[in-house]
Length: 221
DNA sequence: CTACGGATTTTCT
DNA sequence: GAAAATCCGTAGT
Image (cartoon, rainbow, N blue to C red):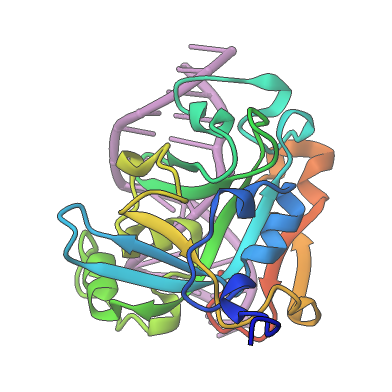
């Protein structure tokens, strides 16, 4: 009976990602995050929202003109990019939006993966309420597939903001990743394209660093 | 379905 | 002072 491997030691659904799971290069992590579950708990610990990650982008750090840490740029805003594997990097942009990244790589290496879209799984009613707040009326009905179909949309739906910048995803009670029902070897269903919204990055704007689950209806485009 | 312009304010030059 | 890892509403195909 001891010779039977326990599935829970591999990637059992629901098991939380640990520190070492994040310690890999951004391209590998961007692929491996697809199919995994992002879970957020409200500040008072009551409301829980979650979704399956269906779209990611890798940001390669010092060499990557599209990365906030390009050329070693280190400021108050992007300090979390140096926090090491498993740290959340949440930034504010365009005067009104938040985006959520998972820092990875080696300790002190400013590389990360932007989570761009989720398939909603838990707390869908709450997600819809949050997404409809602060919108001009009248508005058209908001289909479930659009609740988290974009990096700022998912932050709104899961109430991720700068208060979660710098938290440790392997230890936080507010934000973490759980192993999804599918193993990372779902490579056949992954499409790769250039990254969105980084036209300023010249030759790096075309790099194939965006990853999507082809069969998902919840991606950003 | 695609295309475009405005919103809105932090952040860094 | 300018840009920003975006989104939404409107207009058109």
